[in-house]
Image (cartoon, rainbow, N blue to C red):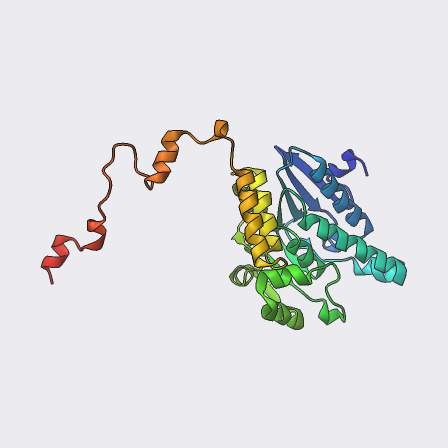
Length: 287
């Protein structure tokens, strides 16, 4: 797949735009509800590879073309019609690899769930660091209703997002969640009228302090469930100190002083704290 293919909006797998280090990849299979077939899988691999290799890349936004669908998961018609057990296993392994690589990208990854997300489409979104959901979008984990289970590695990020009890309930019921409930239970981080626009804002916030700092925070949060507490604390201290800027890059003394005194401007009187601990005289006189 060439660079021109990736930037062609009519490409059968998807399209990619890049502006100021922000990659926006759109799955584009409207006739199949943006379901992922082998071509779309390779499109995602190419996008992840290009993002990883671009030293100026800051973020990757993943969304669906159009307004109706984010992603309907794997293309079951392809699975049933043209793949035997060996081919099916290879395709599932390939998509598990996509999701794993997506979760470990050095840049900020945000799923902009702009429409319906079903099954593997939810797993794909869960592979991103952050998730934004359009107000009228829905999500549904329907694998059990098909006699299947999440096959792209979605169990772990689902449990991390909503906890084991809620994860089991969502899988067993296969019910459809609206944006408000998805936000309430922690499945998504934001709800917005325009999911892509909000995802871009969130990515900008995440990288405002520099990509190195974001990568460190991302790594510790990801590993928090897997690593002994003492080891995590030691590594946090080591990597925090590694992020500390050299003296030549330290913040100006005037700003540092302002931070140290709680935001007061130079020359402002230091608060005594008495006013905070007592009631206004007018209030006391009415008692």
